[in-house]
Amino acid sequence: MEQLNGAPATGNHTNGHHHYHQPGATNHRLRKPGRISRPQFNSPRVSSEPIDTQNNNNNNNQQSACTDFDLAYFQSYNHLGIHEEMIKDRVRTETYRNAILQHQDYIKDKVVVDVGCGTGILSIFCAQAGARRVYAVDASDIATQASEVVKANNLSEIVIVLHGRVEDVEINEEVDVIISEWMGYMLLYESMLGSVITARDRWLKPGGLILPSNASLYIAPITRPERYSDTIDFWRNVYGIDMSPMLQLAKQCAFEEPSVEIINGENVLTWPHVVKYVDCYTVTSQELESVTTKFDFQSMMRATFNGFAFWFDVEFSARGTSTANSSSLLQNDNHPIEGSQRRKRANPSEALVLSTAPEEPPTHWRQTIIYFYEPIEVEQDQHIEGSVKLSQSRENCRFMNIHLEYTSGGRSFVKESVLR
Ligand SMILES: C[S@@+](CC[C@H](N)C(=O)[O-])C[C@H]1O[C@@H](n2cnc3c(N)ncnc32)[C@H](O)[C@@H]1O
Image (cartoon, rainbow, N blue to C red; front, side, top):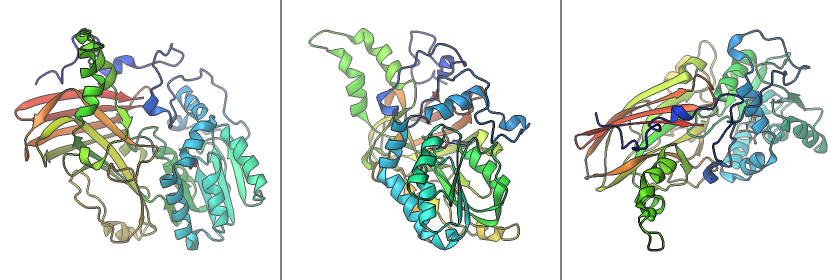
């Protein structure tokens, strides 16, 4: 097997893992312009103080112990800018609001928990939809603002803001509905879904509703030669000066880590492959630790093959509401099949879908691209076979290791990267 997409000759950068930062270590990583919207939590605060002593339930479970990385993660959500950008993402916020209105029958006079309420916006939508009580839980200091917002809207009788982790706060009743906006870049970055699972297992009534109800992560090969020429070929001639000695460094800087940016449908070489389908009613934390899938794409065109793109969609549907004996409902669900190619989204229930696909209007999640150091040329119908493994970083489960292997035109490549 060739190494691997031209790991730069400069040496110790063949693998993004080398750049991992320990808590308290000096962090040299630059903030990338493409990544300002979602939190960056690679500068953990070294502290062992509990986030909220009032709401702590002395949970001794090692699995849910709050680490320094978690504290840094919650701290990253203290900043208003992140919330502003999420709320201004109309595709995101309006789809959630429409989903709440569409499920008003399930919400009216019912008890809701909002996992990670942020500014409280989804909790307030639920209160407006007639919820009897909404527990709005957030471990970040933004919860203080959420409380004020609730007061300003005269909803303090209905919306109870709990400043603490979902894993730690106490809610002394079962809930009918869980709502949460937990999706990170390429769906699983941030690992927040684990906290939705915790909330589900702690409080959701049998037959209760989870919004969103399911999610799918996709991968597809892409062509984007202009990105390569803008960032790499640029160095060949700079004001008439040959700066080509910069080429290796430029490739390393531009393409070592996953890049969060907007592409469009024309960049995609063929139908996407379903990397992971998540049923929010049944998913377990263990199955999210590592996800592996094999793919076999066939390029629909002759093109320069620059890398792979990931994106996701989530669906808001009540069809999946399950009790212990109604799992047949889930069996009949016509959902994307893991490990297969998706040609057209099957949506017989006409459920609301929040999509971050390249052919859809852009969202603040954009798409996540793994670029190769060297592009390759593919012919129409040429196969691109391989596998991808996504795993939570052992040191910090909020980070994601991405291992990609692929073969095309008789050559094989591997690329390792870390989304952090
Ligand atoms: C993506 S934001 C969504 C905020 C808000 N729901 C919205 O839609 O605008 C996720 C929020 O969840 C919070 N969060 C993540 N994990 C949590 C946990 N385990 N317990 C409590 N809050 C959590 C974060 O602090 C952050 O404010």
